[in-house]
Image (cartoon, rainbow over all chains, first blue to last red; front, side):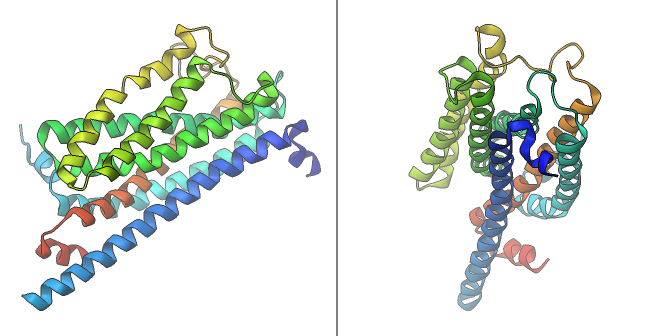
Length: 54
Length: 245
């Protein structure tokens, strides 16, 4: 296990690469989902206003 | 020829609904492929005879670099469709691509630097491939800045579409830079005309990772596209329909 994490002496380069890549992967999931939730909330708000006027 | 499918593709409520249905069909296979590729790349694949375990950076560098150009091409094609057929949904798709593309271009640059340091002895050189990739990042940022700077959505769509289409010349430059110029960057080992120059236990995880990242991109794009369509849509009747479903 210790050998696995050492990556043959390249640990300092291999693990940060993976960490940063999966940071980008997770960040984009979070950004997309938040953006959709915000747009849905905003659309509901607009509909509520339209409903009051109509 | 029956063109109704094309017209339905242009209909925002239809695309909103279809995108929601399709998202899990991209997301789950993407997740499974990426997990399998991680195990294959980090555990099963043997160390490289020259680069030892350092070569394993390829399993994150190649997919992020692939996404950076694939997303740009998708964005430019969507922008062109939006411009030519005045299709709002296509403009919305192009706008949804930029943010994702910028993230993965940055990731490809950083993972490339982390691979370059132990193998070339330097994090950065002004090499044709590396420079063209940096220009790609600036194209994404310029595209996003241009959109953010124009209040009117229709004008922002047209102006940013022109930028996206002009910038697409950078894609073949990135692709062929290692052949056209004397580059420090290694030549492709997978995407070339003859057989890939890699043994199967190294190659298979890489192919799984490339496919997984591609499906992942479309899943994220579909979610962002739905948000973008909702933000643009003013018709109360279909908003009510979309939100109730």
